[in-house]
Image 1 (cartoon, rainbow, N blue to C red):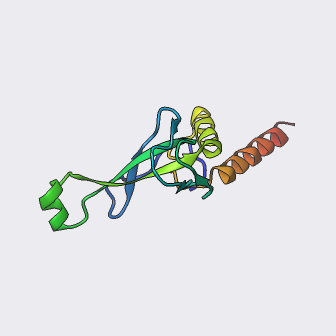
Image 2 (image 1 turned 30 degrees about the vertical axis):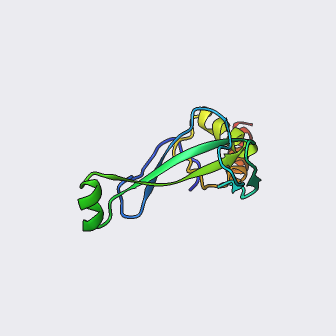
Image 3 (image 1 turned 90 degrees about the vertical axis):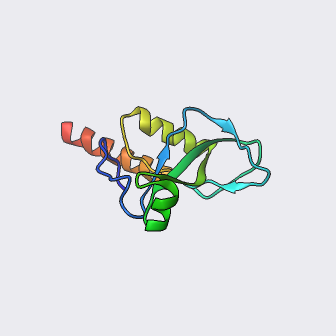
Length: 124
């Protein structure tokens, strides 16, 4: 998804998942390495990372009976390595919303740089 300053997203659309934005960095709390959901590099236990808690809405009658019609089904978390977390927090501070944890942060930063280059060129 391209960079955007607003969200146009239904979190309970079939199959769509939502996430909680982390407040800060933390040491990876796993016994095994995990892949960064953005750049796919390995994050080893104890390394600096961020954790995105995820969930989705119910999509079947069985799930509705278990979790309720407005229930939330927990999904496995996603993690960012320190570099991708830095980029994620920087883009968020610039006012960009709806940056999903599985998007490539490096590509989004390139997109931001291109937007700034175009803005400067149009002003001169």
